[in-house]
Image (cartoon, rainbow, N blue to C red; front, side, top):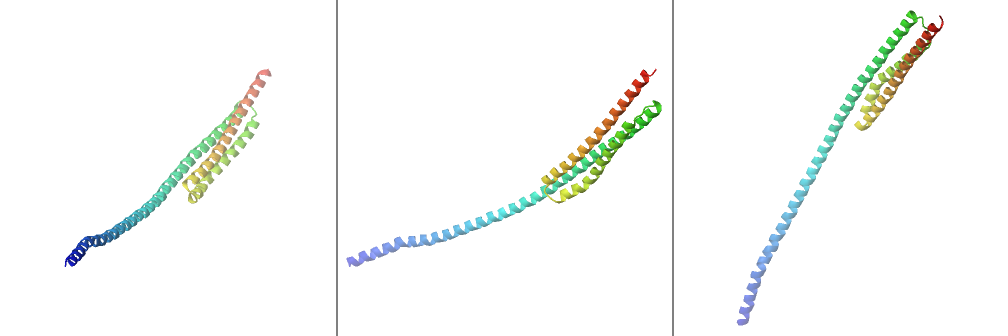
Length: 196
């Protein structure tokens, strides 16, 4: 009997000890499964947030690109106005020089044929500058329609650099005309003083 009591006591003790272990392992599996589910839910949330952020980022990039392209267009329009004003000033200056040449030829009996020839060349350069300036808006439209704002801006700056060179060339020609008038006037004055 003693043996049976001992075996019985050991069996009950082992059951009592193993029951919490089985309960623990069952709850541990449940907690592992719930932890795994929480991780997967968190991973899904993170991936959803990433996708949202990527969508917002691309949307923002296109919006910023559109705004920059508008700024490039405004820059081009402003530069066209500035260069057109320069062409108008050069044309007005050429008209004044032409009037002076006519006045000097009549009032002082001076032959300024060389200055007139240079003036014709200067007017041709002014016309070249004007014609190139007239083509710039079409080139700007093409540049802004195809490409990024940075490439469009650099192309447009190149167009206006060429226009600026044309304007400088025309201005230099007008300076040559004025120098020719001064030389012609000096020759006429020195001839007039040495002939008496």
